[in-house]
Amino acid sequence: MISRKLAAGLFTGLAGVLTMTFGNGQLPLAGTANSSDDPHHMDHVFVIMMENHGREQILDPNNAGTPHLRALAKEYGTAMNYYGVTQPSQPNYIAVTSGSTWGSAANNNDQRVALDHTNIVDQFEEHNVSWKAYMESAPYPGYMGGRYMDPNGSGAYAPGHNPFVLYPSIIDNPERLNKVVPLTQLSTDIADHKVPEFVWITPNLCHDMHMGPGCDTLDETQLERLGDNFVDEWVKKIMNSNAWTGNSTIFITYDEGPGGEYCCDSLPVTAGDLSKSPEVHGGGNVPMIVISRHGSRGYTNNEKYNHYSLLRTIEENWDLGYLGFASDSRQVHSLTPFLRAGS
Image (spheres, rainbow, N blue to C red):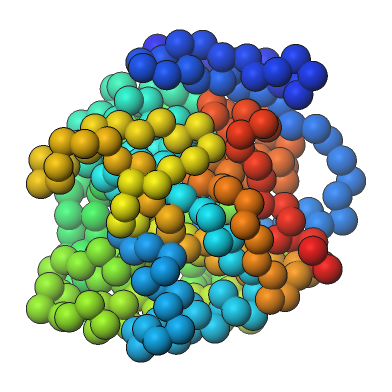
């Protein structure tokens, strides 16, 4: 097991991918990104993580539940072959924030001891990149409890969709833990011109299209419309804020989708959800919509990406080095084509 104190080694494409055995697969060692004066550097990165829907479903031209998401995908950038890493949900959140699922195959917040690994927050803190994770319907900063129903009835906070309370380097550090805040704080931070460089947004169980208390009687179209309206509201707030500077970018994606497709160092594992068949499951083809302030408009490509690609893109932006599978430049490609005008 790799501890979070493991130092990042120098990664170079010429040397190939350095790996070490982990479980049933090979895990690349951490590396260091190349520094460059990239004119497409993202001042702010916003990640909105939705739930449990595939690209074809969400972006179907006939889907009455997702008009705003479909419009954003058409106007900005869409990765046609973007995949979740695995199933069920929580291992995908772990993968995108630490570069591996670390053998996780279930939704279980008791994994905290097993997740004593270097993660993206360790990288941010080491490189002085400001960050916050905004959790809709969480009752207060640093909340470590279970599912919590928003008093306004809009939906419930789900701890399994909050990877930031899984890592000891965060939960054992009060200063870091207090940067995991209710989503209402983002409105305050926008008004106060205090939006951090990295923003993670987890909607509640109704607004992320997962379904849960407050929306469990809705049909699929109604549920999708709730999530679609949520994304529309926050994209507009972000783009109309003083944080929308330089080449700031919003990444809208989903943790996993139907089917078992996978790519890019995503090793399929037996489903942790016992309601699923015991066959192996990849994360499926999910939406990835990239809204980049100076990036291309109406851009799509057929390159294969997954959540490790998103992590790699974030790491490249601030020269953080690479964690786990994000270090494998041969298999895991960044989303930088979406950040360039005229791609």
